[in-house]
Length: 514
Image 1 (tube, one colour):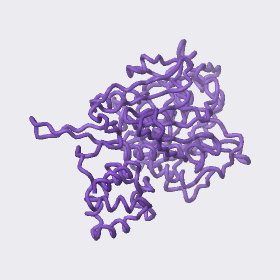
Image 2 (cartoon, one colour):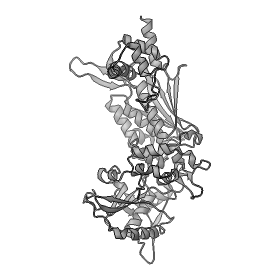
Image 3 (cartoon, one colour):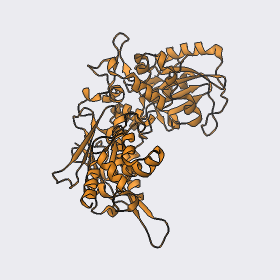
């Protein structure tokens, strides 16, 4: 029987890639405890993406799984599944996790994947076997399932009064609007056991198991999160789903600017935009110190801060608002703008201090997928990471801005003071102001129009690809003078190289000086 889990079981158990608050182990089948925990995962009050309940797996006093597991008797597996189905009908509204029969070290396990439910809040009986059942709300508190009471109960109801936008069915999209190759690529990247079964599963089967497809069997439809992550052109359904990177060489008030837009599935455009910024506008600042052998190395903008700022914007923007995420870069700062601003429950002074805690995530399901791809932690750690990255780089403090209406959110990263007036495009790697070599100038001329690696090697009479890359091409890429036309696939047979704005300026300077 193929695994129905969205994550590799070995990662789940042995490597613990999912935090303990999202996993619970049961040595056997206990209907009362199992249903209460499924209810808690379905309520997902902390917006962590639900969780996993593993039957037949014992653990030690610290909550670590023990191997080999105790396992479940093979003769009891059918009975447990029948009883589980009956018990799930007692959750209000009805909730059914994804069930997968697994084997670990020759022992039988039942693994229940319980993502946050679309019809929260859920209630479950305190005891499903009792004659008179008392239904209560249950939530996860750290690694335990507890009854929601008082403020927790009120918070649960207020948080889950409606289905989040990213978890809704799209009213006009069709199943065929989802891309099977994109789903395959995701499953391979997260090392899901489903990746080995995709040739035998339909698009609908995979979509339902990833919880990005729902609806009756005769008319399945994709959810918004599915279209944003697994459609080739999500902007068809959500206009302005893109990241615009704009470079102002003369500052924000200047007339000159260069713009590049990234459109496509969210994970792809996030990575492509960050890679583009890194290649073209992130420069190393190296200063030699007379009193020490080691040089001091800093960056005009630390890449860790840029990554967190861009991912934060993709994660928390509203896809109902027709405004792109915009990254504006000047010689003075790098600004990430998104719409709308942070939740009103967050005080801006707490945000600026890196102490803000938010429990109202705008895109819970998007965050779930970004976490699986290691693009975010989804634990309100983005802002503290930006603060830490800027501090460790010796950069000025970042600025976090919004208005009283929380209509937009700005993350402003000031340039490192040692970048001076050179600007992002002229802060050369290796800390030297020497111009490009004769071979590099020849390559810059060649790249005025797109050129392949073979074409470039022929220009300078090189035969050794490795030495050519290391000695001539890589320095040009690192300095942001040349860029790849297929940046996400550096070894692509269709790869070409072309000049950037900084490259055109460097070529003009070199030719002017002879």
